[in-house]
Image (cartoon, rainbow, N blue to C red; front, side):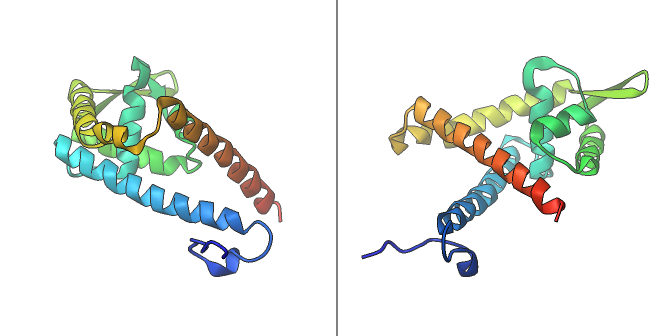
Length: 168
């Protein structure tokens, strides 16, 4: 008996390559679950007013204690629409979670002390509610790294495909 296909769009799951539709459905479910998780984790950490993008930008700014430009953030998060990142930066500035500094023509951003503290509180909630539960999944750290590597490789394939589609 053939296994049932778990897909979101039957018309994309017929013929050769139908498995890609199953992967895409998995990514849809994972993306929405991750977005919901980020906002609820941040709410538990003390800020219920942030969108998933604002949370990602704040964490990215807190990464490696380096000031970053708008273009750096967009590049590292693989976000093509810089205006969405710019809007997130403006909201984070207004909330007092980040600071900015103009150097020549460039504006550099970094987390404020309040933003750093919020990232630490987020980490505490993440450890308690998510990381502790990972031990029950019977996956090693190497397994997790393999999944992450596969997702990065798959994102490259989607980037290539999007460039090809844009040329049609």
